[in-house]
Amino acid sequence: MPISVTGISDDTLGRSARTQRGFTLLELMVVVAIIGMLAGAVILSINTLGPDREIERETGRLRGLVNLLHEEALMQTRDYAVMFTRTGYRFYIYDYQQLKWVDTTADRLLAQHPLPPRLEISLLLDGREVPLERSFESVEPDKPAPQIMLLSSGELTPFTLEMAREDTRGRFELKAELDGSLSVTEEDYD
Image (cartoon, rainbow, N blue to C red):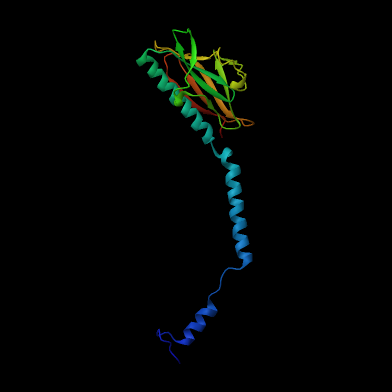
Protein backbone atom coordinates (compact mmCIF):
# COMPACT_ATOMS: atom_id res chain seq x y z
CA MET A 1 0.00 0.00 0.00
CA PRO A 2 1.55 3.32 -1.05
CA ILE A 3 2.08 5.94 1.68
CA SER A 4 2.14 9.67 1.00
CA VAL A 5 4.79 12.11 2.16
CA THR A 6 2.69 12.99 5.20
CA GLY A 7 2.54 9.42 6.32
CA ILE A 8 -1.11 8.77 5.44
CA SER A 9 -1.91 5.90 3.17
CA ASP A 10 -3.75 6.62 -0.07
CA ASP A 11 -6.42 4.11 0.95
CA THR A 12 -7.30 6.11 4.11
CA LEU A 13 -7.72 9.32 2.10
CA GLY A 14 -10.09 7.61 -0.29
CA ARG A 15 -12.32 6.16 2.44
CA SER A 16 -12.67 9.38 4.44
CA ALA A 17 -13.62 11.35 1.34
CA ARG A 18 -16.33 8.81 0.53
CA THR A 19 -17.80 8.66 4.08
CA GLN A 20 -18.01 12.45 4.61
CA ARG A 21 -21.13 14.03 3.27
CA GLY A 22 -22.78 17.44 3.78
CA PHE A 23 -26.37 18.41 4.45
CA THR A 24 -28.80 18.24 1.59
CA LEU A 25 -30.75 21.29 0.55
CA LEU A 26 -33.95 19.63 1.80
CA GLU A 27 -32.49 19.09 5.28
CA LEU A 28 -31.37 22.74 5.48
CA MET A 29 -34.81 23.96 4.39
CA VAL A 30 -36.52 21.86 7.07
CA VAL A 31 -34.24 23.30 9.78
CA VAL A 32 -34.85 26.87 8.58
CA ALA A 33 -38.62 26.26 8.52
CA ILE A 34 -38.59 24.90 12.09
CA ILE A 35 -36.55 27.87 13.33
CA GLY A 36 -38.97 30.24 11.56
CA MET A 37 -42.01 28.62 13.18
CA LEU A 38 -40.42 28.77 16.64
CA ALA A 39 -39.47 32.43 16.19
CA GLY A 40 -43.01 33.23 15.05
CA ALA A 41 -44.50 31.46 18.05
CA VAL A 42 -42.24 33.40 20.42
CA ILE A 43 -43.13 36.74 18.81
CA LEU A 44 -46.85 36.01 18.94
CA SER A 45 -46.75 34.85 22.54
CA ILE A 46 -44.82 37.80 23.96
CA ASN A 47 -47.96 39.67 25.07
CA THR A 48 -49.80 36.54 26.18
CA LEU A 49 -47.01 35.18 28.36
CA GLY A 50 -46.70 38.19 30.61
CA PRO A 51 -46.50 41.91 30.99
CA ASP A 52 -45.45 44.16 28.16
CA ARG A 53 -41.85 45.16 28.93
CA GLU A 54 -42.10 48.40 26.96
CA ILE A 55 -45.06 49.58 29.06
CA GLU A 56 -43.29 48.45 32.23
CA ARG A 57 -40.18 50.43 31.24
CA GLU A 58 -42.17 53.59 30.43
CA THR A 59 -44.14 53.37 33.68
CA GLY A 60 -40.90 52.89 35.61
CA ARG A 61 -39.36 55.90 33.88
CA LEU A 62 -42.31 58.10 34.79
CA ARG A 63 -42.30 56.83 38.38
CA GLY A 64 -38.59 57.62 38.68
CA LEU A 65 -39.04 61.14 37.31
CA VAL A 66 -41.98 61.90 39.62
CA ASN A 67 -39.97 60.58 42.61
CA LEU A 68 -36.98 62.68 41.61
CA LEU A 69 -39.04 65.85 41.18
CA HIS A 70 -40.88 65.25 44.46
CA GLU A 71 -37.54 65.21 46.28
CA GLU A 72 -36.19 68.12 44.26
CA ALA A 73 -39.31 70.20 44.99
CA LEU A 74 -38.69 69.72 48.71
CA MET A 75 -34.97 70.43 48.58
CA GLN A 76 -35.05 73.41 46.21
CA THR A 77 -38.44 74.81 47.31
CA ARG A 78 -39.68 74.79 43.73
CA ASP A 79 -43.08 73.77 42.45
CA TYR A 80 -43.22 71.32 39.55
CA ALA A 81 -46.12 70.05 37.49
CA VAL A 82 -46.82 67.36 34.91
CA MET A 83 -49.12 67.67 31.93
CA PHE A 84 -50.31 64.51 30.24
CA THR A 85 -51.69 63.90 26.80
CA ARG A 86 -52.82 60.49 25.62
CA THR A 87 -49.49 59.95 23.87
CA GLY A 88 -46.94 61.59 26.18
CA TYR A 89 -46.15 63.93 29.04
CA ARG A 90 -44.25 67.11 29.79
CA PHE A 91 -42.93 68.74 32.99
CA TYR A 92 -43.25 72.37 34.04
CA ILE A 93 -41.77 74.64 36.73
CA TYR A 94 -43.78 77.41 38.32
CA ASP A 95 -42.22 80.81 37.70
CA TYR A 96 -43.21 83.17 40.53
CA GLN A 97 -42.01 86.24 38.62
CA GLN A 98 -44.24 85.56 35.61
CA LEU A 99 -46.89 83.85 37.76
CA LYS A 100 -47.30 80.94 35.36
CA TRP A 101 -46.08 77.46 34.55
CA VAL A 102 -43.06 77.49 32.25
CA ASP A 103 -41.62 74.71 30.13
CA THR A 104 -38.42 73.01 31.26
CA THR A 105 -36.79 73.07 27.83
CA ALA A 106 -33.31 73.60 29.28
CA ASP A 107 -33.45 70.27 31.12
CA ARG A 108 -33.41 67.28 28.73
CA LEU A 109 -34.54 64.91 31.49
CA LEU A 110 -37.74 66.90 31.97
CA ALA A 111 -38.39 67.69 28.31
CA GLN A 112 -41.51 66.52 26.52
CA HIS A 113 -41.54 62.74 26.36
CA PRO A 114 -43.64 61.09 23.65
CA LEU A 115 -44.63 57.49 24.28
CA PRO A 116 -43.60 54.76 21.84
CA PRO A 117 -46.15 54.04 19.09
CA ARG A 118 -49.42 52.39 20.16
CA LEU A 119 -48.94 53.18 23.88
CA GLU A 120 -51.52 55.41 25.50
CA ILE A 121 -52.11 57.06 28.86
CA SER A 122 -55.34 57.53 30.76
CA LEU A 123 -55.45 59.66 33.92
CA LEU A 124 -57.80 59.41 36.88
CA LEU A 125 -58.18 62.18 39.47
CA ASP A 126 -60.50 61.51 42.43
CA GLY A 127 -61.65 58.31 40.71
CA ARG A 128 -62.83 60.12 37.56
CA GLU A 129 -61.14 59.93 34.19
CA VAL A 130 -59.67 63.21 33.00
CA PRO A 131 -60.13 63.92 29.28
CA LEU A 132 -56.67 64.22 27.75
CA GLU A 133 -55.64 65.88 24.52
CA ARG A 134 -54.36 63.53 21.81
CA SER A 135 -50.96 65.27 21.63
CA PHE A 136 -49.18 68.47 22.63
CA GLU A 137 -49.80 70.00 19.21
CA SER A 138 -53.33 70.90 20.30
CA VAL A 139 -52.16 72.51 23.59
CA GLU A 140 -51.52 76.27 23.75
CA PRO A 141 -47.82 76.65 24.60
CA ASP A 142 -48.36 79.92 26.55
CA LYS A 143 -51.19 78.59 28.72
CA PRO A 144 -50.43 75.05 29.80
CA ALA A 145 -52.84 73.39 32.22
CA PRO A 146 -50.87 70.67 34.02
CA GLN A 147 -52.98 68.07 35.79
CA ILE A 148 -50.46 66.93 38.44
CA MET A 149 -48.55 69.21 40.82
CA LEU A 150 -45.50 68.43 42.94
CA LEU A 151 -45.35 71.21 45.50
CA SER A 152 -42.44 72.43 47.57
CA SER A 153 -44.49 71.64 50.69
CA GLY A 154 -44.08 67.94 49.86
CA GLU A 155 -47.61 67.44 48.61
CA LEU A 156 -48.36 65.67 45.37
CA THR A 157 -51.67 65.66 43.54
CA PRO A 158 -53.10 62.16 44.15
CA PHE A 159 -53.64 60.43 40.83
CA THR A 160 -53.92 57.09 39.09
CA LEU A 161 -52.32 56.79 35.69
CA GLU A 162 -52.90 53.81 33.44
CA MET A 163 -50.51 53.06 30.61
CA ALA A 164 -51.55 50.48 28.04
CA ARG A 165 -51.05 49.38 24.47
CA GLU A 166 -53.90 50.07 22.05
CA ASP A 167 -56.27 47.12 21.58
CA THR A 168 -55.02 45.11 24.57
CA ARG A 169 -56.42 44.56 28.06
CA GLY A 170 -53.12 44.48 29.95
CA ARG A 171 -51.91 47.70 31.49
CA PHE A 172 -49.64 49.14 34.16
CA GLU A 173 -51.07 51.43 36.79
CA LEU A 174 -49.06 54.15 38.54
CA LYS A 175 -50.79 55.38 41.69
CA ALA A 176 -49.66 58.44 43.66
CA GLU A 177 -50.76 59.45 47.15
CA LEU A 178 -50.88 62.95 48.67
CA ASP A 179 -47.69 62.32 50.67
CA GLY A 180 -45.75 61.52 47.47
CA SER A 181 -45.69 57.74 47.78
CA LEU A 182 -45.93 55.94 44.44
CA SER A 183 -46.85 52.37 43.57
CA VAL A 184 -46.92 50.47 40.29
CA THR A 185 -49.18 47.48 39.64
CA GLU A 186 -49.88 45.23 36.66
CA GLU A 187 -53.49 44.74 35.63
CA ASP A 188 -55.12 42.11 33.39
CA TYR A 189 -51.96 40.24 32.38
CA ASP A 190 -52.52 36.50 32.49
